Length: 156
Image 1 (spheres, rainbow, N blue to C red):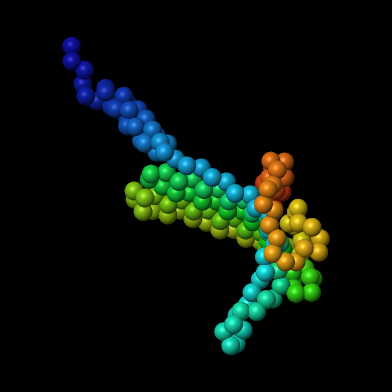
Image 2: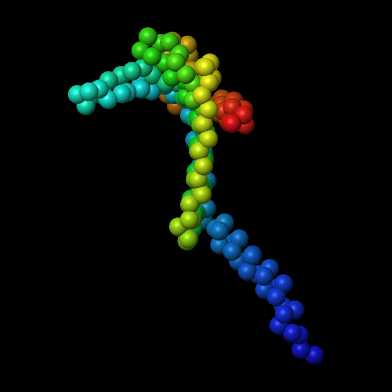
């Protein structure tokens, strides 16, 4: 007895889904960067030159997933802004997301931000105003920064 083609449709659909999932997962690279640093802030003056206006203390967590057919980036930051005298001016919390398909060229992106009045960045020594970066963070420090940044992102 012959089976009608319609009865094979669920099996065909299952095979198609498995094929797509296996193609998407193969060769996918994942990277995560947890950063703690201080950087100068600059502003362009009337003559076109950039002048130092202060500095910012930053905690950032960036994850990148790149495959043959797509790229995803997710950036979460806390940026405490200070003037040249070291007075806190504001804190900006930001979460940016981008997913781009290399097949359809479609992009899905979003950015959420909030401004706070109190400093929020951690693991940066008080009085640190110049270029500074924690180059060799322990796993405990990375976890602490991840959880701290995420706690602010969850409130956006």
